[in-house]
Image (cartoon, one colour):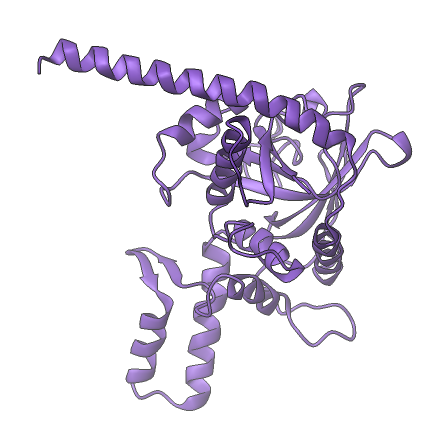
Length: 326
């Protein structure tokens, strides 16, 4: 087969994929618009919202205001801090989120030599003949280090959905947001084709779909931040192998347009190193205001980006709304 023929076949396949994406998106927009008009009837969604609010308070109530500023600072991921009367420190709460995915909490540690199995590291430490108290110290140090170095925002969302009672067929529990975003995209495609689907969420255009409390608001980040539309996201996922790294971030919508006030609140994990509530504003069409789309750039007086020199903390490449189907 000649190189020119291979290029022609590749172009034809890409065009066909693009056509399928467009067809699914058109059919999906109708389902999304209809879904946005209905209140969510699944009681488990309300359980997830209640648990997100509870965790937010246990983490000290950290809040990002509508102007993108950090209004209130809470407890951070690897700290021993806790609210008065609570016995569980913050870092152990993060470990609880990981245990929704694996008893290894988390199963792999990020190190200077790459990812290392936590069980292997703990076993090697114990094999060194250290005293029992030292073993506890090593275990806690390993876990607290892993919590700092390993993004846990997807584990937080998976924890909320699992504790609310969703099954693996209904939600793709994962330490990568991309896995359940992909499941939602596949669900939208199945709906467009009139085929059955079990996943609890469909993928909707965040720029045109009204969010409801119980939906998931998702953004690209890092190496994928240039993917800034639902069509581009669907095309990227058409080429993604399941389990392949695709950095994203999702937050649970816990309040949306109550009494027509055009206000939005989300709760996410690992946002400025805590479980954080973000307040945003909806536009006249009751979808997310355009000022929240894009990267969080550093302030002009900062020489480099990063807390506390980041600009608008609520601004991200928001790219898809995962809408509850029930």
